[in-house]
Image 1 (cartoon, rainbow, N blue to C red):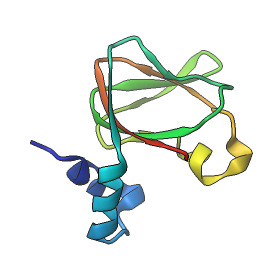
Image 2 (tube, one colour; image 1 turned 45 degrees about the vertical axis):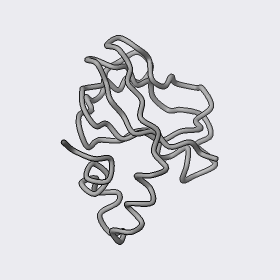
Image 3 (cartoon, rainbow, N blue to C red; image 1 turned 60 degrees about the vertical axis):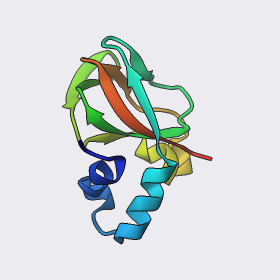
Image 4 (spheres, rainbow, N blue to C red; image 1 turned 90 degrees about the horizontal axis):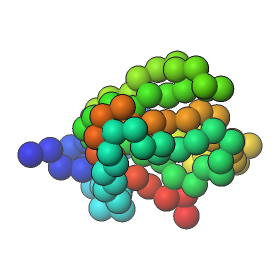
Length: 107
């Protein structure tokens, strides 16, 4: 069984972090499971979370047009945490299948 730490260790964004820091992040993660068809984040809404997909697929759409499909190891919402000028979401993320994510709140 894959642990949150294993999932995060496989994400390129965290690849340069020491193992102890990845373990700390994993302990702070909140697991989220959403059914297929659920909007996880929506365009122009305030961004206050970052998510890493553990299992399932999600569609990224911008102005109603699909632009990418995300799967295990992919992430979304990072700009809301990194850059204050990206306060609002720039894309809509919709669960294509049942989705299992590790979520991190901005605060």
